[in-house]
Length: 418
Image (tube, rainbow, N blue to C red; front, side, top):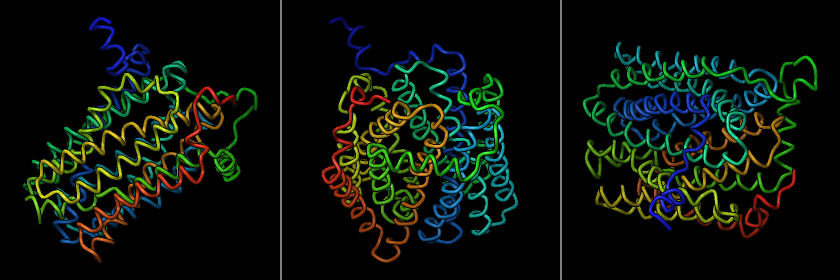
């Protein structure tokens, strides 16, 4: 085997970038995700500066959770009934407006924790609609055989932004320069608006057969939920991800731990650590598309995630903590790719929007609920117990679900005929 052949087999597959619409959306998302990390760091740090409470930081997750649960389900149903490009543009504008609101309150030094909660909630509404819509678009822009590679590219890009963004944002928030952080996000988001405008029209494939479109409502949402409830593989993949994020994610503890254990300058490294591992996993991901037992790989990755997080919570060296979180991030990257690939190849196009809505409710809502869980348990038992105990619990629950309900670990793409 030549060196070139080795690199092709073991490094990230970039073939989906040959498709111009996908490439344009990829670039727009890359720049926007970089900017979004400035807000992701600045909001909790600003909240901690105002309140000196991890519980208040955790409440940011609750403020985002409710809109995510409601609007991701509804938004996914809508994206199965209308032109997905238009829906993506409208929901992206909502997110951009919320970012401008965060910038304004920082410039005016309002210092209101309640206002921060409200703006985070508005931003979550836009995200809840735009994210499933954007993901449902991907199979229409690339070939079916390229879906795992496209998901790997998207995830790697997202986590790369989560490395660079928090490190730079950490320098700004260290000086409490929150307005500058929000300004970077607002400016970067204009690129994804441009990329969305340049997409071709993407009406759902089933509209031509059904005639005139009708407004999506509870019936469409219910159909998506029933589809998942009657598909054990999908149901278990969602359940395991909920366990991983709700129980193990220590994100809302980062401001407190940085302040008490490592020093305030460490907060950027803590926010970037998980993503560092995810990027390294993505760059060496040529093997991902060749794995046939995707369900087994998904479960193993989630168990590794929980154990790595638990060990990182015991570390009193910043760099050991970062390294262990990076291991967890690599595992999370692998599990994210397989969850998304299973969903996109298991379900037909007519259900993609609704199922992606449920997916976003889980993968975005789970971390928010995890923020609440971590902040609340830290307030009672302390940050270390909350961090370590959550990681152990996630690994145990994921393994237990896989053993008790083996449909997921038996799953392989060849076994599905839908």
